[in-house]
Length: 518
Image (tube, rainbow, N blue to C red; front, side, top):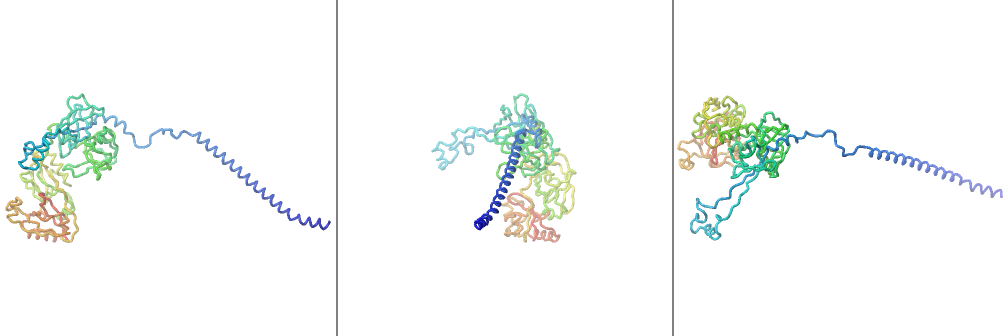
């Protein structure tokens, strides 16, 4: 027994460590579970505390004490919009179709297929033609008696004009005067009670970056206010000789033309006129006529019904770097005379094609717009001094300003001298024969040589010169033979000028073209 008991004792002894080990393991598990429970409890408590904090906070929709962003334009818009009007234009019914004043088909010769067509189908002359809506634009009242400023292109083809106030009241309007060169027109409403109006201000204080409001009638929707800034000043968009636009990014869409441009104080600083857009829609580049320009034109239209301008009688173009280099000028400044019109003040004063006008009436001419604006503002009959560069020498000329006829006082040519880096001039010239002179309506002693051929890929071709053109001057000297041209070109090259300046008559126009040397 004793041995068996010992044996049994030995047999049980190994289980104690295992039992102890299990107990320790369970203890560890209990401690981990307890820690996890405590952590979970603390976490839930923190979560509940956070939830309690959210519930205790102010609502997210509570408004701010002060607005964030630029100041509101509501006060300005409320004050000025009653003076802004919609301008609706209509054209009278089309007249009976006629030929040389005789109604169709009687106006067509016997046996004519068109006459048989009209006789068979009764002709179109008897068809009723309803009013044809031409379009809508904008304008603004500048006088309580009913004077309205708008763009000329808004009312140019109109037979009847109607303006609509912001409250929907409509009035017929008549044209007092219009000026196509600045694209401005003045209308008058008769028989209306005193109307709300705004004064034409001045854009001189407006700075690039200032806030502006464009008010008008986009797409015929009615009065609309758009905000933006002035992006640039003095823009030339090649719409006429007096371009001097404010560039803005306030949207000017179709129907906004003729509407006012206000500054942030509600003063009219411009007339919304044009946009630049490849697609025809607003891309943030709009143009407005400065208010001071509009004020001058409106005064003329109101007093005379038309604008009276001074007239010099020259065709001009800018002095580009290429032109300046061709003439040996120190800087690209001044106005290049491309042609002098017959019987003009300029011709009487001795101005010649190729002259570079550097000063007029004591004012420096930096670009062609300086001359057109200056001359336009001078009363006809006034004598002024012109300073010109001719043949490398400065000359003083006295000219009596004339009264502008229907044509422009100074017509800018369609392009500046072309830049070119071609290796050759590439012109093949021929003398003008009597037959050629007669065919072209030239005098027997008129200077010039014929461009017989232009080498493909040459500087002359890249400069836009075509076969059949006439070259009448090289630099500032007339030429009468191909040898004259060759000699003048050699002289320009010997003087190490970058290009040679040619006066080219092409497609009925005279212009100077700078052709670089190889």
